[in-house]
Image 1: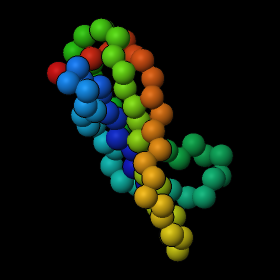
Image 2: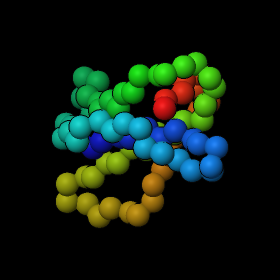
Image 3: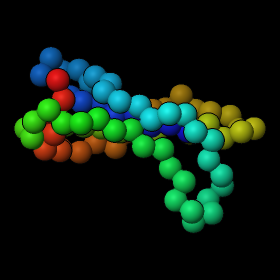
Image 4: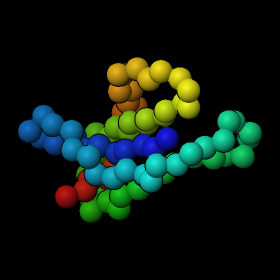
Length: 78
């Protein structure tokens, strides 16, 4: 499993800014296993960001979809 952060640019493109390391997680145990992608902000201008999480389950087929969660955040990276 891993996740990546994408920032929206005025040329109508999403640009990848950070990805977490790939990590094998245990089945849910309540322990809070997770992956984290981080990037420091260069200023506090409101910007669209989205997060893509890729999960590969051992022994299961994988779909080609790329689900994202998107939000407006007071953070811009150059």
